[in-house]
Length: 235
Ligand code: UDP
Image (tube, rainbow, N blue to C red; front, side, top):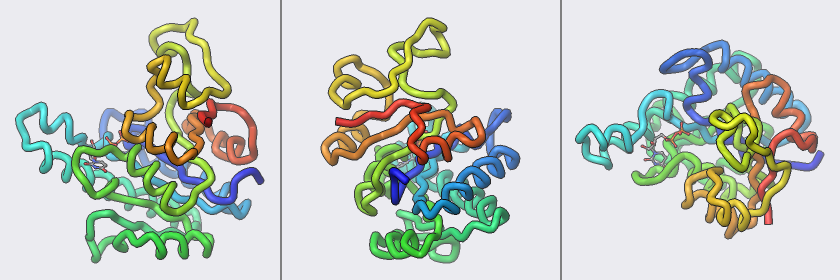
């Protein structure tokens, strides 16, 4: 296997499935099955989950809310998603731990780097909730930060598109997909992979990112098996 330890980033929006809002239990169960297959290969799996299906701080702030409070709401939304994912994984007989960057002791363990690594070594899927614990950041930044902290080999960004294109493939059917691209080229061409804070943190720490379509069952397994179905960003 190419990777010993992966960090999977799932957006909150992905959990909506066909819905307009909230969490689709069918989608969640599909994700759990896909993740289980990877765990069964002996790969250590850490997950950062977004909150965009429930609340985004920027949206709250644009409606007149204080940005910090709005971001706290966004971070709590990621904890809700983390609990839902934990429940789906446990229903599939996968051992998990939810660790949160904001302390909610009755609900989840507080994030402690060494604890997280220990859980991973024991084969438990570790879900990181509440982003970085700080307002003005995104869960993409949390994903990169946690991946570096726990020494993950790669970030797998599961999205609804199957990679990085030179133009938005949902707007232009002639858009061309990259199999590989360098960090520098992404910046030069102004392509959207992650927000700039997250992206440069990944670049500075030489942590590769693979963008792939997580909504096709079996794709996660293909990616960890080294199949080039998405786009890999590295040096
Ligand atoms: N958030 C935050 N700090 C973090 C991570 C997330 O304040 O470190 C808040 C922010 O308000 C954000 C929301 O949580 O809009 C949900 O995260 P994100 O938008 O990254 O979720 P996704 O787009 O992946 O669903």
